[in-house]
Image (cartoon, rainbow, N blue to C red; front, side, top):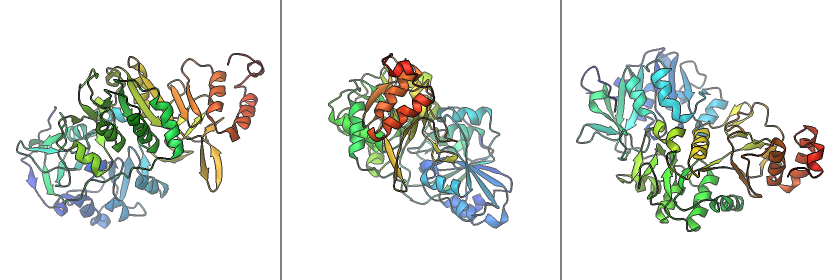
Length: 449
C-alpha cells in the first residue's frame, strides 16, 4: 500500500472547523456510497452563502446532500458524479449534477494520472482501531487513490461504519490531517425488489447455463438479483464470487450453500467485491467476516484480473438493445439515468476467462404513460449511450428465450433478437429490419438462419 504522509499528526476538530477549511474555488471529494460524509456535509451546507464555485465529486449518493439542498440554484456548489443513484438522477434533471464518463475499474488511474490533486477529501470511516487504521467498511472503490493524491485528508469517524476486511480497505492515521467525530447513522440500505414472473423466467434461462465452480459477478438491479434466487434453487455447487457490487442476492447464494470459492484461481475461498450495497442482512454477513474481502476497484474490475478466474460469469441488465446487439444500459436519450459502472469491463473479463460467459438481461417490454413499448428496437433512442458494444455482447436473455450473439452476422443477430421480443412487436421489428437492410430478401426466403 502506497502511503501518503500527512503534513502533521492528525488533529481532532469539529465538523464546523473542518468546513471552515473550505475556500471558494476548491475541489472536494466525498468518495460516495457508504463513505459519503454526514456531519461534514451538514457543516458545509451551513457555509453556503460564504462560498462560491466549490466543486464536489462523489458517486451513488445514498442520502440527500445537504450542500446541494442548501443551494438549489447552483450559485455556490457544483457536483460531479461517477454513477447516479435515484437522488443523483433527480438532481441531474434539475441541472445540479453532471455525470463523469468512465469504466469504473479505471477510476484509481484517473486520479493518479489525469485528475489534479484534490484540495480536500472527506470520507466517513469506522473509528480508529488499535493499529491506527480507519476502516472504509463496505466501500473501498478508489478511496486509496483519492487519499494518495489529496492535499488534505479528513475522516469522519463513525460508529455506524462496520469493520470489513480487505488488504487496502482503510487509511492509517499517519495519512490523515483531520479527524471529525461522526454520528452513528447506520449504513444506507437498498431495498430488495420482489421477484416478478418475468424476472423468474429470465433467471431460469441464465441458471441453466451456470456450471458448478463458476465465478460469478452480479450487476445492480432486480433482474440480476432474481438470477441469484433461481441459481440458488438449481443445486449448483462450488460457486465463487468476484464482483464489483456485493448484493443481497449473492449473500443468498452463500447462505444456500452454493458458494465455496473452492475452484477459484484467485482468492480461493474468498468472496471478493469492491463495495457492498444492500440490506442489514447483507452487511451483517460481511462484518468482520474474514471470507468477505473488500478490494480496490482496479483489482475487482479490470478485465485482465477478472479473466484469471476460470468460468467467470457476468450477469448484468440493460434497458434497451438494438437489432445489431448494442446495449444501452445507462441513459434514456440525453437524460442520464445511472452510469457505465463496471458492466463493459465484466463483459470483457468474463469472455476472456477460460470457459467464461456473460449475460445481458432485460424484460421484452416496459410501460410509459400507459403505453407498452419494446426494449428490443431497430435503432436505439436518439442520444442513448451504448454501454456495451455489439462486438462484446454474448448472451442476451428476455422472458422469451436466450441467444448467444458471438459469431453471428448482422442478419442472424437481427433475426435472433426479434425472436426474443414480445410477440406483439415481432412483425413490426421484422418489417423495419427488412427496410433497413438488416434482413436481406434472400435471408428471409430461406437463407442462413
